Image (cartoon, rainbow, N blue to C red; front, side, top):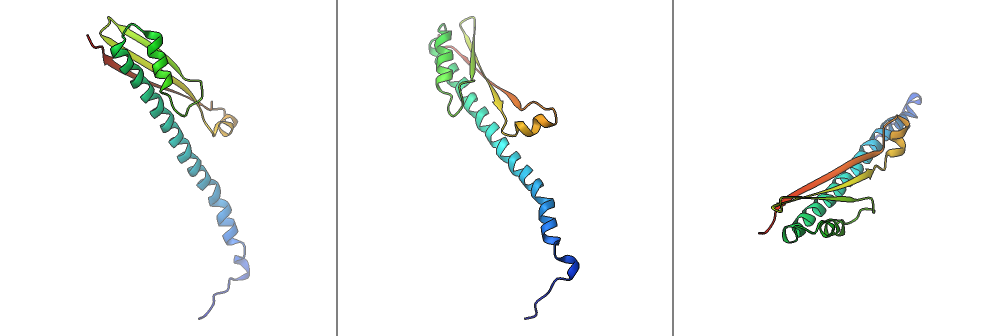
Length: 130
């Protein structure tokens, strides 16, 4: 089997190609990780809003209880989650849960002048049981 030897001018070609493509691959990998974390956070606060609205269908005048039920069902997020309850004529409950997501790529984004925080909000509306 004949072996192919590189010419003298091609000795560093692999290293140069690797150095050129690695930053782009890392950027794509960080983007995938960041998107999945944002999706997880949004899914968690959406579930919390739905749980708060579900509690509000049975207890429509208990806004502190509705907000506590919503915040108690948040999983995997720090304590920066806020909830807001709105009762419309005791027939409709609307619960809004807000979360300021701090991106893991925030230090890189601040270099170019972009804030590293995404404001996530999820709302759920349900009719009360009369």
